Length: 260
Image (spheres, one colour):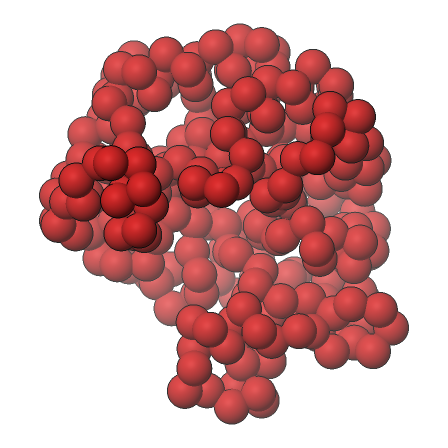
């Protein structure tokens, strides 16, 4: 087994306890290391779902990708995270982000802070968790300089959207070991080998299809082709963790099988 890879899958709908249980089993049996829940209004509440997943599984870790730190006080977030960590027998990976969707703040009746204020609060939350719950692995995801500086200083896992910020993170980590995680935004469906580029095109509207297909987080070709690409990302950039959406999990399970 190749032990230096970490594979995470995110789900954003829960129809019933039974369907959640089946999904969790399928992800665990497919070789995923982590099952993630996002933190958006309109999506499932992360901690109750993760606690339920933990009770139905024995190996797969449970995580948030990512909690909107600006929604929470450090002490209350730490309390809930610590309970999930306990109920999962230490299987929680707590992912944090600065928050960015103004409409969600308005819907939650929470003032929308400036970008600088949101990053400062993210750092405040991360410091609190490191001080009071160092046993809980932290993932911090983002792309801007300030968020990635916080991630490099406090996170065990740094969530990236590309490989262009790898050296920035390493420099800010100052020798502290961190796991680099890359978000996979598109992967093939069926046997065509061609991914749906809707999501990556939303974040890179000025790129051609050929340029989008060349992005590190976009997979194409056979599962073996993608496995080779992930190995190259590990060897060239030190990226060893990959986070995918559930819609791409069937294809990605074949990629995992090629690697392991």
